[in-house]
Image (cartoon, rainbow, N blue to C red):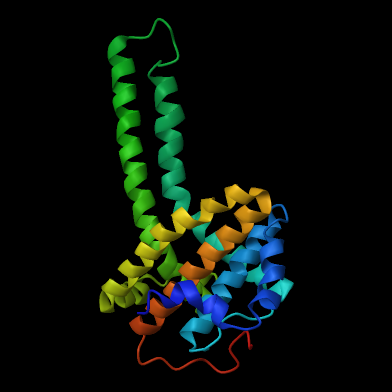
Length: 228
């Protein structure tokens, strides 16, 4: 794993600006723009996995949109337990225990508050787990390009077990990216998009490195997308 390369590889490509301005600006498009940018990031991951020395490429709107939407659906499925737990403990239990009733039993209110505290802790733990798991799943979906590849649990578990330290570095990269992404607020909206895109590209490269090392020896599939 080359952690530093994830910061610099963008500018090692002399055509980086012509390759990136379209996906970055697509991030400004409401709703679908996020799918397009995410699809581009995933294809960058795929290029890293396939050993492309310059993983940036000229985007194709339709392909990026399709891949990004598949990833959105995969994330939605993974997030269902967290969504259900949050709804149950944040809304249903307080209502049934009479938390919003001025005449409610203090014991019920206390129980409801404890329940909400507990769900906050559970939500935090689940969110942390998803933060670690999502790059693994995203890389697998990026390489194989299918919705079903997001749920190849045995194969993905074996990859993580084979090179756990590599995926920990991806997690560390995500944490660094979480500090980089908000810096764009200093330069208003376009700055936010640029800094968030840079953070995403950094994480995409790390995920590609980790996936490649976890699958070594790895043979790229024929006619992989996208070419440079």
